[in-house]
Length: 341
Image (tube, rainbow, N blue to C red):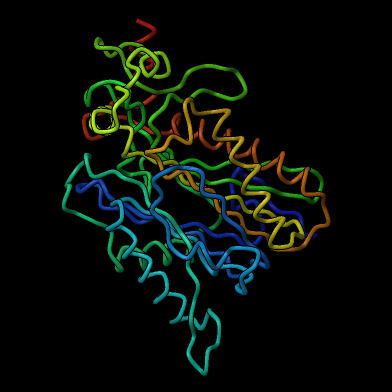
């Protein structure tokens, strides 16, 4: 295997390319991961309110071995339309399945809810999806993090009022063992609090009213204890923001994996969500992880899955560390400065 520069990024996996496009004024963006060399893929959706596309084809019992690209977007369900631009980009380059002389690319993906940030009536479109692909095509392995791409409008910490939320964003990391590389990319738009999995330091979450520290999302959730009757519980859950947040991610590896084992890698990567976000996988979130394998290095699924969870947890932490203040919401760096005063 040819050695290459390691960046602690999903692009440490040979053949994986990442591009962003965003409208910073509207607070919307998309991220595209080109993976046309993938040999197998899987997905595991654990949130109760997912917004996804082309996930059924990744089931181990279905015929498509792997998608040609993964698409992440803001704009809630409206943002799924931007994946059409990714298909157009791939078709223009002859990438896809040949179906009776028609090139049909497969683009799997997911969206986050970010309509409370920026322009609520602005959504990613096909042109933005195409632009992200062009950015990926021109990239040289570097993946900008923080308030970029699908992380442009992301927020975290919804246990309090709107002004107690913090800026979320996009992060990436990798784990390496010999020739084996496992990379993660994640868009952190979670309801819960985020901690550094290596140090235990809280990086972000629901702010206190003074905005110089944390209120403790898990404790606030327990203290509220939603009403027992269904109608009141639904109304209280919506008011608490329990229906509108999602963290979405991708695991890429150069391991040789079957489709069932690619799905298993995605499942094990969810441990990274649980290590870095509390609470995670709530009924109102669409927490989803995709996995693609390029099939170059022999390995064991237990090793790949453990490395996937590690890379995913660190990618989440990096997303928050790189998310600067924006759109009236504090980022990690600015909050840290206030806490040291």
